[in-house]
Length: 77
Image (tube, rainbow, N blue to C red; front, side, top):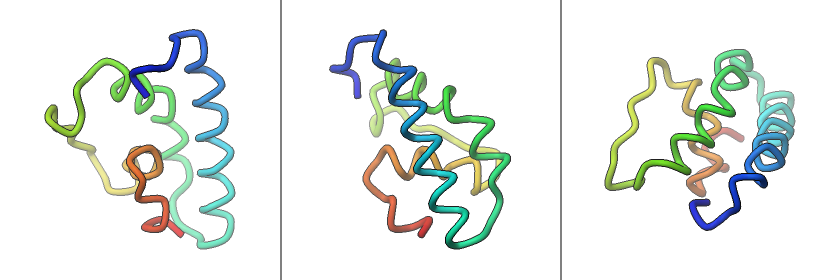
């Protein structure tokens, strides 16, 4: 993600939002918390050196976008 041009981040956020909506619409669950942090999640992963820099989420469903970005999409489906 850090290799992307900053101008491409809005498109990534849009794709992440679409994937999140699709996943939650099939499995049920909390959608609002994850949607509320999509852009934040993209920005955090762009700026910080994850996984060396640790991210802490307030509630588990805020981590849905983070899980998608870190290759754990199957954990929300």
